Image (cartoon, rainbow, N blue to C red):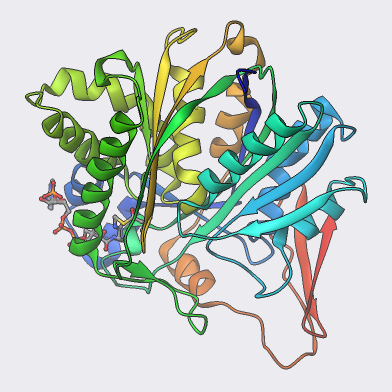
Length: 389
Ligand code: CAA
């Protein structure tokens, strides 16, 4: 049980296209300060017509497979809340695209944006049971709200893949966890809708309540005191939310809100989310990627994770950066995944937003748009056909 288990490798992918918030503001007349400062977003990733959670998930995981091989991977856990099938796990497509061995268990997990944390913690448990095996965790989501709705500027899309293993090269995941569940309707997506429904204000209140509740349980379980943490990776539906959440936690713990302290604890974690937008399950782990890629040496320092999934479930836990972790980072590749996106004009974005495959069971090829490593080639006879480019 004392064996170190955690994140051995981490890699992100995002979309072919990007829409700057200046373009959205130019169209709808919003003062740009509301987007840049009010919610803390600069641009949003937009999937091409031939991209989805599978192509992004496979693109995020492929470099991990290239570095570590497939021999020890016995489980793939795919976390998403923008699922493409009600029965088949998106992870099975990723398993095929990556050429993983047939002797693998694959499953999809869902609880809104919390799903990746459920996957990570389950992976830690599996590795503790058999430290020879590794678990591939993939968190991949397309965040989509109705056009012209308040949620629209918080859209985004990305995937994070993490290899969970014994004696990890990046971050050791610690016990205990602080847990919280409450049956509420702050954000949800009925099966017949592609865009999520949300009660914006209620969702922020619910998130903050979940932060203090998960933290309370964490301390009751014997967790670390707040001032031991070097930084905090919050779920970031928009980056301003991480600041709101940390301010709330500081106040809950009896600290005055010190802006410099707040910046130090959160700012590095927001760099990727600020230009990608909400990536639901991937969001907190994009926060970790940005922190590890950008912060000064964190060796031996505890990092706090607060995962929130509407509906709602939250978990607070700690991870510690392990000696030598900086040698294993993918900082340049992460920046390249962000920088390579092609800028959409606003009309093209709206067209992509409203696009969907006909559901008549015919053969419907997807227009070739992505220059990424994997693409959704067609919907044929109700089956999604993927290919490696
Ligand atoms: N310059 C600077 N700041 C400005 C400004 C300007 N010109 N104009 C407005 N602002 C500020 C406002 O003061 C406000 O700041 P505070 O929150 O600090 O008060 C901020 O910009 C946002 O303004 P509004 O509250 O008026 O914005 P809104 O009502 O149009 O939309 C939102 C905000 C409700 C969060 C909306 O984006 C939304 O519905 N988002 C989707 C739901 C969501 O992300 N919820 C978060 C918690 S739920 C969760 O985390 C799960 C998940 O992933 C969805």
